[in-house]
Image 1 (cartoon, rainbow, N blue to C red):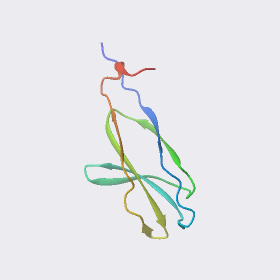
Image 2: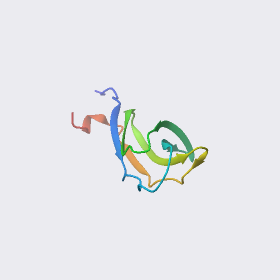
Image 3: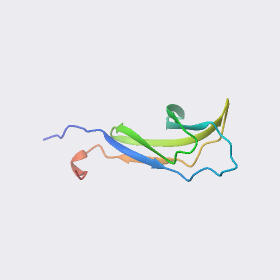
Image 4: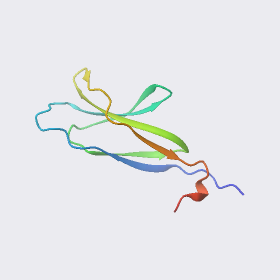
Length: 91
């Protein structure tokens, strides 16, 4: 018997930016196969973000602060390895 794959939601969080750092906002990226995919752009004072409908497999996320056309380097990354056998997940 196979259980249909269900997508999950995850929340990523980070420390607040230093008050003296002036930025326009934060960009949330997924990193896969050495390529960045922009998921969303949020306000500069946000410290969490919910990523919806994550599918099975390993997913890596980073954030970058931006000001106009300039962007910071990558934050520390967070990787979510979601099992392909969802029957082991608690509901």
